[in-house]
Length: 378
Ligand SMILES: [Fe+2]
Ligand SMILES: [Fe+2]
Image 1: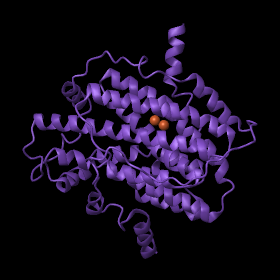
Image 2: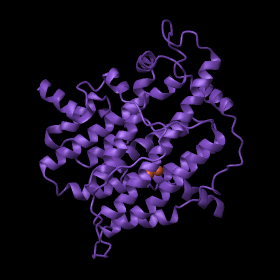
Image 3: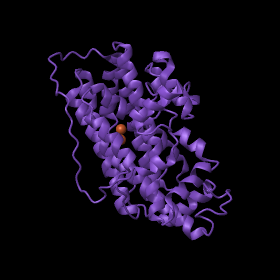
Image 4: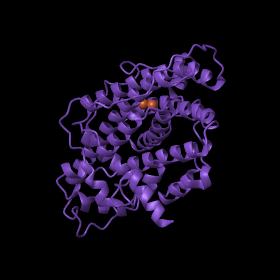
């Protein structure tokens, strides 16, 4: 049994032990200077001649998306000045610095004082928002792909609104990075591998599973976490508006796949479970921020060891999966095939979220844009 599992881990994620730090850090972005990156996508572009809108839940989502569009140039307070170092210091003070309570003897951080921790916070923020921006471009491409490949007219309609949403998200993250922060980072290698895999898969439902359920499920949780931790009003509003859209995107994935998975065979479902697991591991790996440690000039492996034993780490890491796990459960992926994915999520330490609220219906409650407009009109 153990041998079987390690073999399949090797095939899926390239290593037997999901926690093998050497193997994780061995994957780096070797093309940091490239300005364009091509991925071959082989899916068929599907016309449908059936224009009848028979899927009520997708139709409702489409109508909602049409009235919840916002303008990245005029709906956010770009006039606010951002002093990044002051913001980092305020965030660290408000949230108890992540590593503040740890004993740093014999670690690369032994001699670090306030100045280094602030610089780390600055780099970490540049890195985090850069990865969000790259991920948003991945969503833009994947969703344009769904417009072509999904066979249902209601889904093509909805996906077209998401394409506009994602363009706006890339735009606002890029503008925030360029005008308020202090530098970009290239895409993290683990995130890049995942986006490439999703785009290259020719099956339309795999695009949904990789992007709408896994990547956007994680993004929704991560944006929520960052929104809560941030003291900077422009970023807070930006994140809150992006989250309003993301909740719809994840709902789009859940509502579409629920119908489609009901028709799939056991082996087909198992492939989806494996894909979900692979995506979960890639996303977890990217949060080690290896490029930030490199830029700070510390030994990456030693730094990562400290990160892994930080008392806040398990909470932060598992929180990222708080939307993914209930959504996988709702799709039947958790327990199909004798609970294969349940076992993997248990190993990753995230199974405790299985009964949290799923995102099929949550988008109304998260629609900050509609709430703001209601306030203005009263
Ligand atoms: Fe997005
Ligand atoms: Fe999205």
